[in-house]
Length: 250
Length: 308
Image (cartoon, helix red, strand yellow):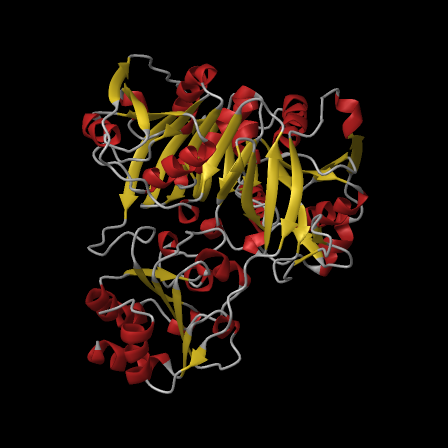
């Protein structure tokens, strides 16, 4: 079976983002970018399914300008077989991304689509669920275990109260949580090999979808800052401060 | 203008965070209805009827909704959506799971995780792990919104709304529940506790989390963890506080052996008082802490437990 893995190029998770002085957005000029960590876990899971003989082909897809080819090459180096870039210079809403991905699903007919549960930039946590709705597929979000069994996939999900296991008819959508796997590092030979793997560019404008924005960013401001407090020299002082100054314990 | 609020519950009790989502609905303004979708969930409906500012509780009671499967719940909510301009759910695992599905079925965007309401179409939400705060205007006629509980104060529960049962059953038939493996804890729920004590990589292993338990018991606190501690396998993921874990804002947050990565700060920096215990005086956690102790947690924790 084919596995489709949509991925996103985002700010590197170690970088602390800054807000532009005019409050129009965050400043991403000259900032280190990377594959979204949850998307990397998605690629790893798909590659493991292939190594286990369950998946036959892993296709990575990303929506963005030319620069996201860098992350698609990363996915190829991690073991994806081929890549598709849906080219656009616009920053699209999750719904429009899901609509573009739906077309790829229609064309490629994957049995499983694995996505990251959220991107660490917009923190929306939407695309996988929206793609599931548009394609009429079942969804297993926040997955910590994925087991394909016959025409079903069992997904163990990280929920607020612990773990929940559900069974989904295939084809299905899975979104990854942290503990699903630990992604491998791409080896140098695989990075070299990835450069020769197929990467197809498809302009978003050719998809025949109305991609007009669904929301407007009014402003972006820095969060309220906490001022640093004091270092206390002993546990006794700490307890005294918590009782009498902060009044949060009695 | 009417607002539909989806109730978070476990078929027996209404989750208190729903009261905060109702507060967000009040900030938007309009006639507020609560949807209780579950199985054998009449007691939840009775509780929901007491929530202030709510005029109607809609109960959809069916085995199809017992486990809040996104495929079934989203069809139900979409079916009801015609009567509402705003649809709100709490940004917890259930709401996060099914709401984007509702939005896509309605062909509208979703505004996730709002922490404030500017107007009926404009909302405030954190992005980049809370390192930036975005004000976003929805351009859709219908607004599908998830509400971050730490952003709103709960409404009171001395109201009396009418309870209406609907017999619509939407079963997509493409997913089924297999099993639950729930964490059993005598301690308060992480999201609801007024005191939280969390351990990080500095705890060194899962066994050492016992050092936090004695303190948690004395303070009536919940126990949390950083992503590093979860990644290292010390504790389960449902204890994770951070950007992609739980967002908490207790009166007192005690961070033990946690360096203070931005992803962790995203989950706790709205706490009223923050205490940091770390042996590295340069750890970034001290920049947000009200009180810090620079010291070895293996010395500090037993002393703290003894003196509380």
